[in-house]
Length: 280
Image (cartoon, rainbow, N blue to C red; front, top):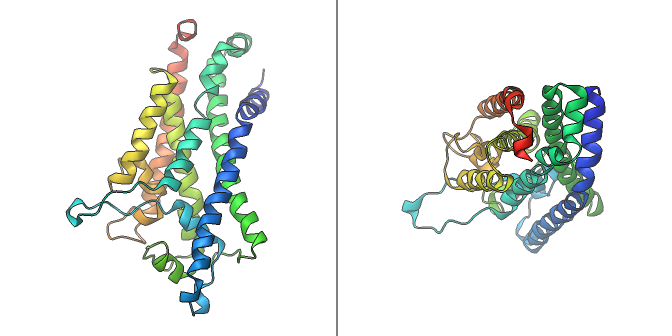
């Protein structure tokens, strides 16, 4: 069996198992955006400048804003960024079961036929990447459809007043490339890195413990302002364009790519020694 046939098989079966979650996520994104837009409409009379006109980028900033660094000395209660957390937790959950669950089904037969465990592992890594990209593509599709329905400008411009007054986010003027990095590339790459890391943990722990650990990492990312908590790179409010000593885009891209590459190589080594029968 060739690699592309195995990947096609994984995409067909793995995505079909989670189809209802993808559909639910699309609806959830639509609801989140609708809630934000309703708040914008209620306060629209406060904006008298044309530069306050809402755009698709403002909506994406809302979804991926995350949370500013927490400062206990200010005396404010810590509030989790529910929207941001749900997006990344659902991505991790969707990619949790299928890879090692496949070993309980046709996986052993496939590995026996191809006699190359590395291809099986690479196919599962590619599956994780494709599922993560599909997850975020549905998010962006929901936002785009919402913008078309309510005639919101679809461009790379954004209303600074909306960021400041509604999102409480003082964002420097960003170029188109920087905006793409903030709301598309880094969120997707961060999620792929997290999901690949979760996949590697499957060699040592049961799936439920892998997901719990990833959940702790994501929750820690909302509290601690540090590159060790990788979720920081996927928050607009933690970027260098929002706060002093914020996360640099290049650092985030390098670290997430490094985690993905190391995870894939680590799995190629582990799968050769992995006791498949014991896993079953």
